[in-house]
Image 1: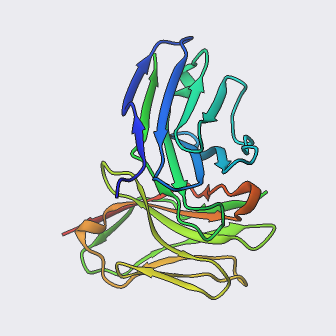
Image 2: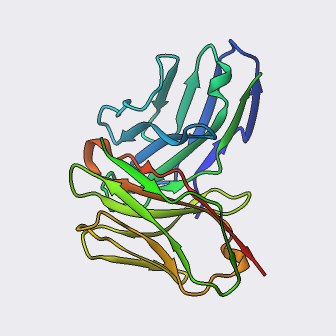
Image 3: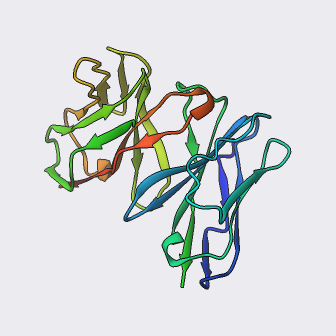
Length: 115
Length: 113
């Protein structure tokens, strides 16, 4: 079946602009995650959605970052007033439930470049 | 806090050589442990996992054993191939309300023919 998809694959923006990144998880997966991969920081957790529970936002680096998950499926990560340090690859993952033994399946990522 | 430490790369080996990539973790509880791999130009994918102490995860000739006494999860393969060239990430997760993966920094493996 289809894997996790993300769009756009690449995004170039100017400093100060807002951007939206989209994630379509695997159908039926109740858990969805956002991570960020950058040269300086490696792979960092950003936010986790599980079913109808309140999301775990503990990894969001600042209040310029927010995410929504509509209808328990598609998720959008929004970065307001982008800064150059936001440049990174943003990865989305989903898993069938929120247990530690679950495999998280990753999408191809969105490469964000802030000029 | 919880963390994962991996050996620095790059690791350069000849084809058919034995591979070990060291991974140790610091955890307040009893996490599940994972190895993820990122092939050139591709996304992250699970290589293997182990969910409790003494479990051995294996896949594609790779193995790793969850060692609670040494807090380690070293990745091994008896005979590497050029196609194994990739970046390997060790990670841990607890599940529940904080089911995030905590990753190590990654180890680049380059296998030469």
